[in-house]
Length: 373
Image 1 (cartoon, rainbow, N blue to C red):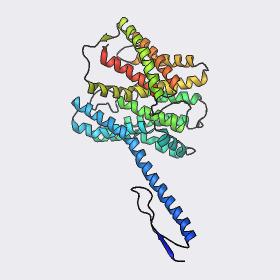
Image 2: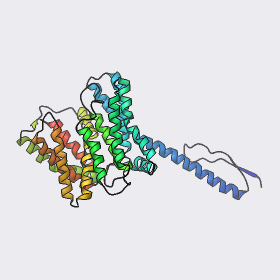
Image 3: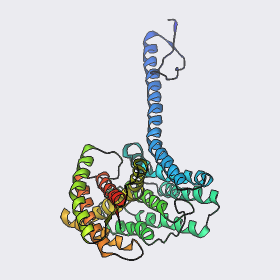
Image 4: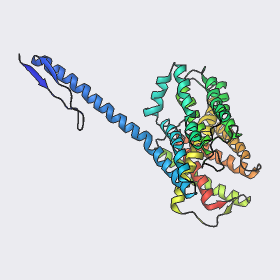
């Protein structure tokens, strides 16, 4: 039989396959199908890889651009912004990517399973953004780096002996404390205030979020955390219902206690959107991950009554707000505890962190736009 030469293309825009020479029509037909199938799956893999990369990077790039614009409006020099924005982008990318379960965190969890060396090595990437921030600005501190190194690795060592996906144990409580308390009591120190050169520790919260998700979602695979950026209609409905039910009560109580007073003027639409987005990223999602996804979730596994787990987590949430400001304020504690009940209910009804994070963002945005303390 004569030789048959075949050239096969796998879909629009795909690269042309290599040539295949075979003897016999039957053998040639079989080989053609194999080559076409290989080229088709390679093309699909390339397409999905590009799509996944875009899905991972698009939102962090937009938020980083917004942070840069906000810094510009606050008068931060462009040279300083250019030096620190890569660190902000790295933190936001990690925070966002870990919320893409099918594309990132599930695959990462399978890759790390049974390999302490891989787990330890990958955990060290969490402090890389500090180097991206501190080195260009010339503010690197060996002591600060050591504190950050211990902050990342102490809770990791606690969880190393925990079996992935197993029910919560005392090690989980200790690991949560090691992630939360250094941030609550500012034990990391002024590693990287944001905006640069000004007061604030917002980036510490992003580091804590990345660390907590890596430890409890990727490594530990703790059931019920609900960390995801995939918003469904149920999340929006629950968030809207809880917000509309809770806000009138909280506003009336805050005004009657003298804790809130109406704002003199309203912000412009553009800055308001930026502020709300910043509240979601820096406050809403990190705090809901800690107090609902971890603390309420751990209590729920030990306390069979959902109402009790919601109430206990709300008390912890309210008590944490005694550390806000120059001195403790019982009015803030009361409003924060009531808010914790609302956020806990949103988490219980939705099963994910997006609903309570959205309610949290809407409540804090309402205080910021319409009221003053």
